[in-house]
Length: 125
Image (cartoon, rainbow, N blue to C red; front, side, top):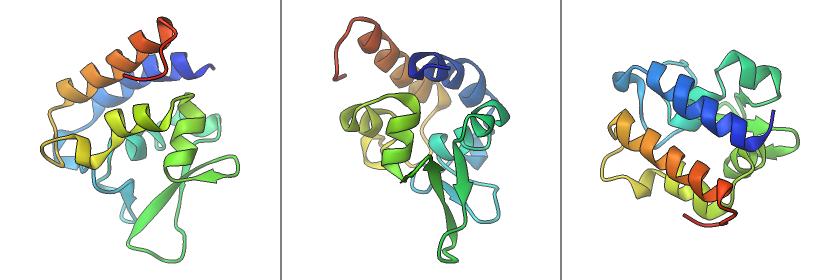
């Protein structure tokens, strides 16, 4: 599956299924597995897990790290979705939203912005 297809699936299936009370853009996923950011929820989505995106409990922190191939954190998400650091920050960065619990519609809109920019061959949003 290509990065563009993964982004579409993220916008159309993963994000709409998130309970807004289980969204917290400040952390990938707490070790209890109940609350996390959009990328953390994506790493729990079975088709993405089958493709290698996953969460790991590293160093017994209170939250899990997101991993893909040899990458962790933002680099793992960027590699999995085929996005730039600026695109990562725009879609997943906790500081890019006015609240750590943004409306899902806003998150979906940002993902669609990146999809559109990738279709048009732009590297930034």
